[in-house]
Length: 111
Length: 114
Image 1 (tube, rainbow over the protein chains, first blue to last red):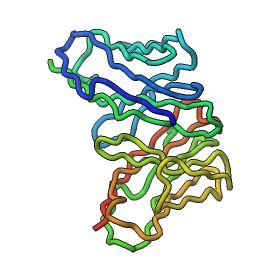
Image 2 (image 1 turned 60 degrees about the horizontal axis):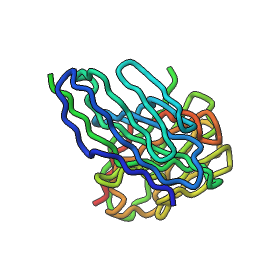
Image 3 (image 1 turned 90 degrees about the horizontal axis):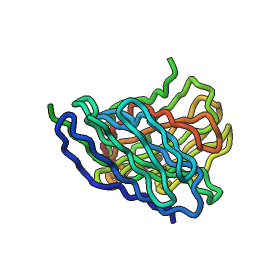
Image 4 (image 1 turned 90 degrees about the vertical axis):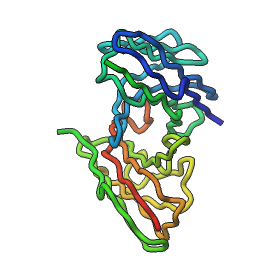
C-alpha cells in the first residue's frame, strides 16, 4: 500500500529563517510526486511535480527536491505570506490513477 | 478564468436525506476526482474518473456515488448521508487521464450531517 509521511506536523519560523519540510514515501513505483500549498478554507494550490530521483524544481523562495525515498521542500528566507499548510502527494505504478496525500506540514512564518 | 466550481460551499443536512454536491470544470480536463479532508487524516480520495462514463473507486468510496455523463461535470452523490460523512470535500481536475499532471482544486464544500 502506498504511504506518504510528512514532517514536521507544524513548523514555526521567523521571517528570513530558512528551513526544509520533509515528505517520505513508500510506493511500488513512483510516477510522480506533487507538492501543494493549502491556505485555510481553500482548496490546495499546485506548486511542483517531480518525476524522478535527482530532479529539482524552484519557484520564488521554494525549491523541491526528490530522492528514491523522500522529497524536501526547501523554503529560503520565508515571508509571512508563505504561511500555509504544505501537502505532498504521490502517484504510483499500481495501475490505478490514485493520488495518495500526506497529512501536511502547517507552516507559520512570523514577522 | 480556468477553474473548478463546487456547489454548495456549505451544507447542513439530516441523516438519510439524499444530497448531491456538484462539480464543474472549464478546462476540458480528462481526469476528475473527489476527496474528503478530515483533521489528522489528510486528503483521501473517494472516487475518480479518467473520462466520460469511466469512474473508479478511490480509498474511501463507501456511502458515495459519482457519475460522469459529461466531460465537465462530476457530481458527488450521498444517497443516505450519515454523521461520519461530515467533512470538507474537494473536487479536482487535471488535464491528463493518467493523473500525472497538476490538479486544480475547487473551493471546497463543508458538509455537516446531523
